[in-house]
Length: 132
Ligand code: FES
Image 1 (cartoon, rainbow, N blue to C red):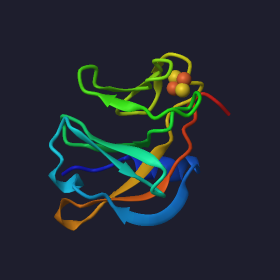
Image 2: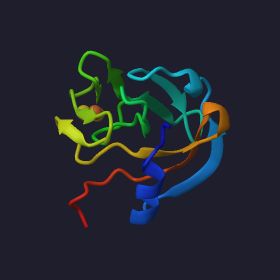
Image 3: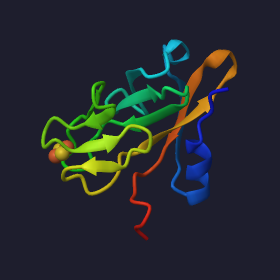
Image 4: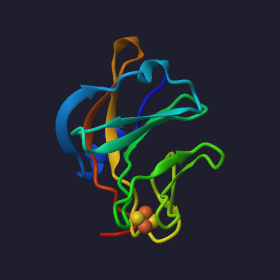
């Protein structure tokens, strides 16, 4: 079954910020290898939900950690790319793989519900795993 490891990881590292839970519309019909855009926690907070080829969900804020442009999912490269200065992030981990962003994207914490529904329940702080 598809499961998200994000929520547990974030609780363990203490970086979880809780927001009101929200069902992500259309997530249950998202095919492995595809993605959709949504907003969370407010309508002004652009986010992206991706499903890996293995069926695992991952979601991130689209706000680039460099100067705040909105990153796009690049299907050909399979990563999240910022149009402003070509910063690129790993789609599975949110980690920076190219360009000027100083830290990872902020992860959206997901919770799986019955019927394949995917809910956003919080947001983490994207920090480099090697920073204090
Ligand atoms: Fe995204 Fe500069 S704002 S790379």
